[in-house]
Length: 157
Image 1 (cartoon, rainbow, N blue to C red):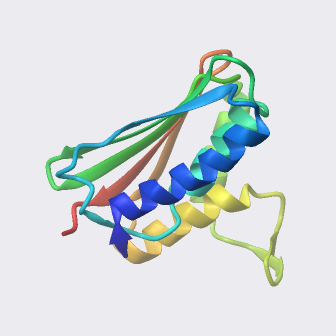
Image 2 (image 1 turned 90 degrees about the horizontal axis):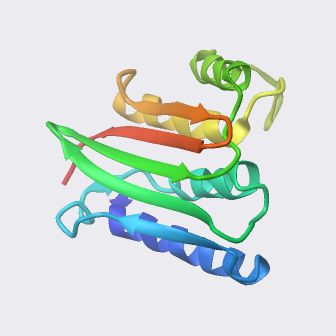
């Protein structure tokens, strides 16, 4: 477990490199209160989600593209949200991804899976294994309007 602030710094470091690659065509907006930055989260759960937003949602950067990272407290839960204003997903694609999140992992050999979204599935599985079945990822998307991934975690100091 690491402080949320450390995860955010990791995301910002990743994005600073991608901004150079993309000629500063997109932006990252972070909206996280200082009081939440010291809460503990699993390491490396945000950067892969931001990377997915950049590569799949924004389709490799266009002027005006935006990724947002936010955090709020809701009762005893920490809700992290990574959203983009990109191409979004069709209902069928979103449904397929949501089914994959709830499938039992199947490995063909070490490190390989049957056509699954490995990054998202890995994060979702790690969260559930560590915190329990209530926690994990929720994904919403609309074609032409973007995608939002909600990470539900227990509030931990």
